[in-house]
Image 1 (cartoon, rainbow, N blue to C red):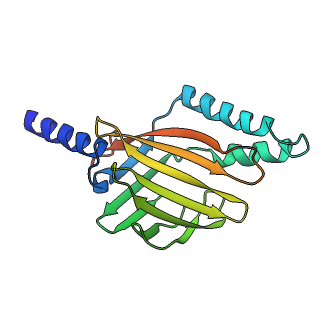
Image 2 (cartoon, rainbow, N blue to C red; image 1 turned 90 degrees about the horizontal axis):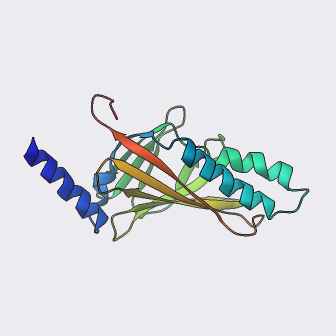
Length: 177
């Protein structure tokens, strides 16, 4: 058992120091609590506060919806491909570092998206829309089970990009976190 713990820590250290993106593969459940929810809500409020007062009542609910956490998802990364699966949405499969493909957002709308691996072991998803887009950086923590998704939302309607992050924990093969 101790040997497997040492191997797991070595893999986690590898991703933190430029390991292969395949170690991000897994099923994840949202682990951010109330503090994370308050932080994201505050980021939305800051973004809306900088907008024209006529745009605020329209922008706030849209941004609140756009910043919701995924309750669960599965990320499968192979050397040259990514599959992203969420309940109730079509699977998204694309070549890693390749061309864009259709992504169905949580709002049911169609977007263009791609995934790319970075030298630091993170994987970045870029989603584009007519009115802006988002960049999400998936990074595995040193413990090998905590995944942070750092998101930047861009739109010409925002004075500056909206940034926030969500935390997820990997589920084991029995579905336990």
